[in-house]
Length: 394
Image 1 (cartoon, helix red, strand yellow):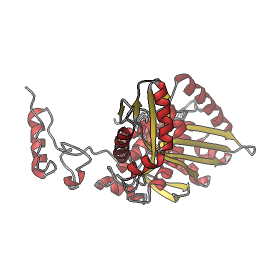
Image 2 (tube, helix red, strand yellow; image 1 turned 180 degrees about the vertical axis):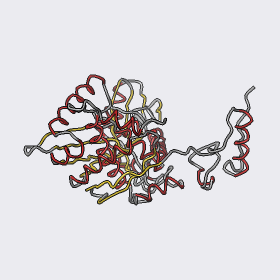
Image 3 (cartoon, helix red, strand yellow; image 1 turned 90 degrees about the horizontal axis):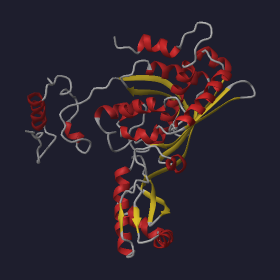
């Protein structure tokens, strides 16, 4: 017979109800809680972030850096908190950061911003759907007014619409300030859709999400149209700096990247990079981001070449980098401290944070890209050797 987890209708974050859930776990499961039940923050602050709270997951946090960024919002050296259980990862990122510093830093550029909700509107036939698309364009100003009445910072910038069969798939695109904005855009779009339903009587019905925003999924539409922020990070590394620190020449790195491009194409990979999800996930965990947004955020493309002077140019573009410095899990105690390490907590800091995140991935890509090479003389692999030394929890 199943037993319900203890809940409180009055206050589900009090010390008393949390203690009841901890006792429930010990009575009804094989676990003996010792570590998960210990936490230092006020559980009341977790309201809105989690339900049925009983404890915490203590993920180790390491510090990488300094990371030299030449951005428009992030400028200078940054120490980056990274939460992970993968040994060697911080060591690898630190190696890449050393190359970045000796090369003068990573240039970062934010080129776009859009968070979506994507309702689908259903009609009797395609002709009615086509006419509705024209009506959306003609009535955008009023729809914008209704949507923006629900938020103090969200701005509806445009509505894309695509006809398929008797359905009109849309993407309501918003800017959302320093919040990630998924909840904000849901509420705004719902109010807009209800207004549309009242005005447009021939519509059969609508779904608030037609899955065309591809939330928490990699997709072609996000790679072209963007979701969150579109960010590029690029660097030119002198040949001597690359060889001294990574034991690889620009020509060798470029050759390996070319092979990786072919394998990414053959396998249908979401990107042609080595492991951007590694650095992003570690940063997301440390700073209170919605970790499931890694599905969109890790999607990227890389580009590299050897310059006429023999140096190495490398660039990575993220079309759907979703991060926040305000709202969500960013205000939780440990997550706020990690954001404060980079001076990225609170309003006005989101673009700074995404520039740091994009620059961080460059460090990881350079280091792993070089480590996967087999040394022609020693027949050793930096990748294997480093994991043997640092990555095995013996």
